[in-house]
Figure 1 (cartoon, one colour):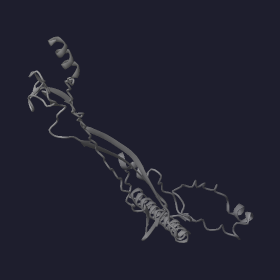
Figure 2: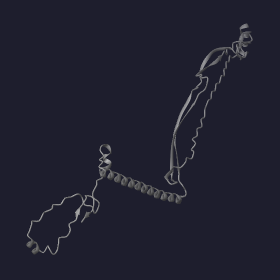
Figure 3: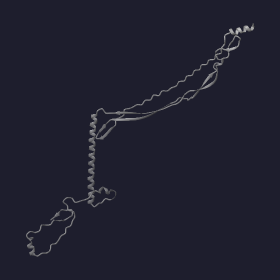
Length: 252
């Protein structure tokens, strides 16, 4: 009879289930945003100056390369952190009909850490390099003034060339005169500066005879009769022009 009653009690008694549930969600989120801007500042147009207050501007192309770097980090650096794992043991807290300890759905040792589990943080340093090129072009809108300025610049350049040629001519004339004076004085330049007067030489000016000699032939003596018969007595010989100095004019 006792065995039958015990069997009936086991069948009718509610079943006690041991349930252990642990929820430990971990969510890590990190991010960084870096905004970089390149400022393009309008530069001054190139100006060509030709002297005389003439300055002309034209189209200008500016090409500017750039290179920028960014670095970000977090401190302190922790590649891992220790996540606690709590003791979820639930063996007691309730009694069955027979008075035995059964789980009650609550941890027997709440807050007790069983061990620590290393979790990777994903923390890292960020480094970036950005490069590029900026280009700007500037074009004068008033083209008529640009053409006028260019025409004035060409005339200014021609004027400068004429002044240079004039200065060169004055220098050459002075050089030739000074070299000629040195040659007249009998001074001969040698050495390094001899080439300054290498192309200068003296000559006789127009109307001046160079130094020379004449051969004078004496006539044979003749008798008075022969001289009278020859006719020279009636027309005497013309006067002979004999130079008196190498650089003077001939005199009678």
